[in-house]
Image (cartoon, rainbow, N blue to C red):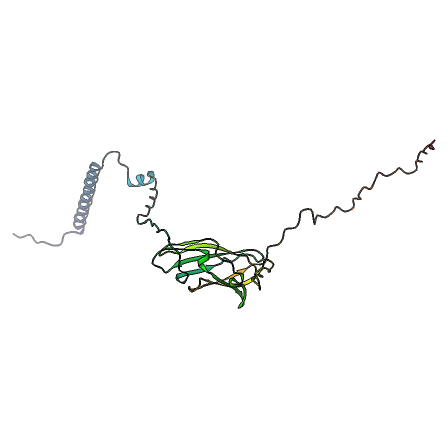
Length: 247
C-alpha cells in the first residue's frame, strides 16, 4: 500500500532553515575561539602590543652625515725662476663701495701659461695700468713711472694666485705728483697687463667721499638767557666808605 506524498507544511521548512542557520553560527563561533586560543599560546608573556611599543619608544635621532672621504690633499710645487712677462695673465677686480678721496684696493688674479711655476717681481712685471672714466684716462702708469706691484708674486704651475695692490686714488696728471687731485665719484674702467701679455679689464664704481668728522668743541650751542658774570655787583643805596687821605 503506497502512501501518497504531498508538500510538507511551511512550518517544517522554516524549522529546517533555522536549524541550519544555528549550526552555521555555532561553527563560526567555534572556529574563532580556536584561532584566538592558538594566538594566545604563540604570543610570549609580557610582550608589548605594537601600539604601546610605538608610544613608549622615542623617535630615533637622525644619524650624522658621514664626512667626505674623497678629499685629496694638494701640494703646490714651489715657484722658482722669473716669470716671462709675455706669458703672464692678470685679471683685475675692484670691489664696489670704495670711496672717492682715498686709496682704492685692486685685487689681481695672476696666472702663467709657462710649463712651470715662477715669481713675478716688480722690476720684471712692467705692469701697464690705465684707469679711465667715460673713455678719458684718469691714471696712466706710464706717466707715473712707478711699479704698480710692490711685492713679488709667486705663481704656481697650473694655478692662479690672488694678490692685492693699491691705487692712490689720484689722477696721474702730467707729472704724477702728490698734488694731483683725487678721482671723483662715478664709474671707472681699469685695464691692466704685463708688457706683451694679455691684458685684463674690469669696471667699478667709486662712492661719494666720506663726510669729514666735525672738530670736538665746535658746533655746541650756548645756553640762552644766562648772562655771563663780569664781576661782583655792588649793592645799590649804600654809600661807599671814604678813603683817608694819604699823609
